[in-house]
Length: 263
Image (cartoon, rainbow, N blue to C red):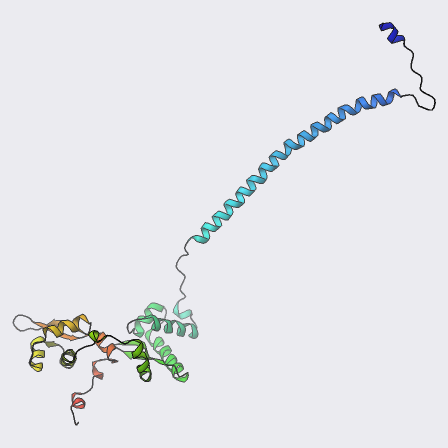
């Protein structure tokens, strides 16, 4: 049987049909390994793509970390802003700073204190700036002005606007000083430093409660002790007293003869 297969003659091709060439079979046999190699190459390509994907993932993680670090840096509070020394400030900048200090200060603030806060300048220059501001406010018909009271400067509304300001800041009757308290305060203002006994001698009544009220309001304070037996307390007025009555100093108190009826 094997011999018959070996001796089997080649089948002749049909008329008009070319016989199969042995070379093509060889080509197909050679192409098969090539396809296998292509498949291997494709598999290798997939394997190579995996590290590339890992690299992309690492880059994305690094980018996210950078963004988070930047967000944390932005969230961190900034340090104190550097303050330019006064000698490097222009006149306009210095004027603006002085104006800001005057507006935010609850109490009168003197030129020396402002110069110390600004740094690199002195009270004389600050005073000149205040004069410029006063001139500007007057020229612009502002409703307020910088006044020198209680040893310092403060922005105050002009007297002609008092009726409207008083309505806005109307105080309850309990917070107003009584006539007795005003009399006691006047005696202390004109005779300070003064003993309680001297105040009571002038008024003709005890004034312990009035003194306590005035001290609580910040208008009167203990300024020392007398040298007599027992070293009794001496009383005087405060800067708040000057501020409340719009006085630069006690020298601006009205003269007693000016307060006398018919004078």
